[in-house]
Image (cartoon, rainbow, N blue to C red; front, side, top):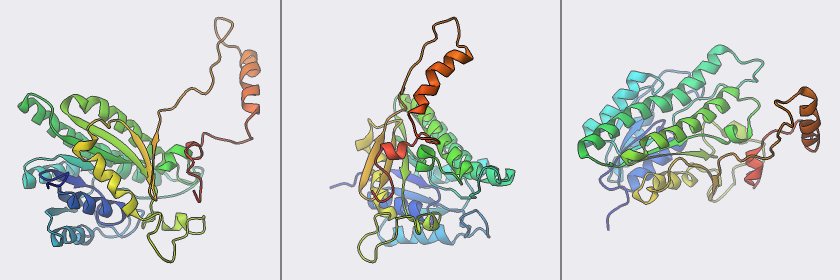
Length: 315
């Protein structure tokens, strides 16, 4: 019996640790040949000397299990290095079929204290990094489709976050990047569908090097025994599924995943609608219509999609 991803090749960014590592191992377990990308900096804020160690270690794990893998230690925030990553997969395995964008860093700060550098660094790695790899993978699939005279196989799985869905007070850069990734995903899904390519995004909740202090003391303590509900291994199977032929009809979707739970997020819906009784609204008319509407909501309440999804802490 063949494996679901047998004969396919994949790139996973940020795959030296945490979620990316679990995803790379899962894709390999399902039969894919994997390029393991990781810049290898030890600091979750992107600090420290780059190292080939994390990517190489995951490659060795995949090979030890009988799979095929190659390391890549470039920075996906760099346009040329992202090009080289995609070209490596094509050179090593003949083509690229699956792109999983996971690489990221954190530089948390309240919006009134954040520096320009802290903003730019997070946007660069998360949002620009997703664009960079997508741009070159998309060009590859378009060229193959033109040569074949029809659709080819292509899968993109991008990594967003609940910080985008429900807000995160100390992460304006991260939340903005993750929201941008959803926009990039839906645009890409529409643009590449005719070539046979799908693009989807996930919002994973997992205990990793980047999030361990976020969960500490916040109702998400790691259990003393058994599988951690926030283990990255809960997320990896969904990535494997979205990368597979079985998911050919799943495109432009956003899915929240953690601890044995998957929630499919709808596109935003209109909550209320108001029409002017004149040529255009006046201040007084808006005051009459909108003020009572928002007066029914608690002071300071914001759009909290996570609560709508039943993803409050401890659930």
